[in-house]
Figure (tube, one colour):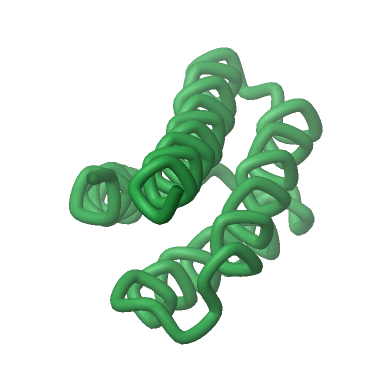
Amino acid sequence: FFFLFFSLFSISHFFLMLKAKEGFLEGRAYLLDYHFQEASAEFEQALHYLDEAVALDPQGPLAQKIATVKQKVREAQATLAQGQNLPPHLLEELRQEFQAILP
């Protein structure tokens, strides 16, 4: 039973992290066409999935790393809300952060 629960937990966590990364990648694609509002919406979806992933295990080893990624995504959204494009280094940092938190 424990193994089944742990497997379902791991699968759920992995799925949420993949959906978060997908939102980030979609947002990045919108930025290439200077669609800031759409990019911000995709980043908001990524934040939603990151929140759900943390809710599964708020004291887990990834919770702090996810909090760091969420902060960077929020900074990106603030920049987009001002009608500015994101610097390439920030996008690369976010990509690396997402890669680091994926199991």
